[in-house]
Image (cartoon, rainbow, N blue to C red; front, side, top):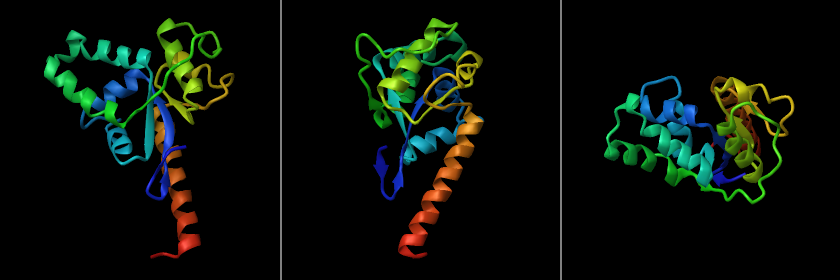
Length: 162
């Protein structure tokens, strides 16, 4: 795991729908994720394939983002990511119905991620057979809160309250 200050960053793969929600909808339900990667509480992982998918989706007409808007959103995310090269051949992953989900599973394994965060029902359905936890954004938020509490308690126990 990466470290920032005294806290340990959670290595996380965020699927495209989660990222778009966090990036495009500033006051939305997933806007807390931006703060999480900006402060180093999570270390997002990205591969060539997952970054390309994000770029493709940000260009969808339904978001009405200019090229500059798209660059600004990418600039608010990609610098905080650890770039991971997925080997060829990629790690073996369970069969998934949607081929666009495969790169996220492969990145999770190749990048030694602690968690894959997704709202995608096809990916969530693989949670029992995948060796890395697959969590919904709300479950991940609770996991992050619990992890921070534990780290704070350990720090306070070791070093005192101040």
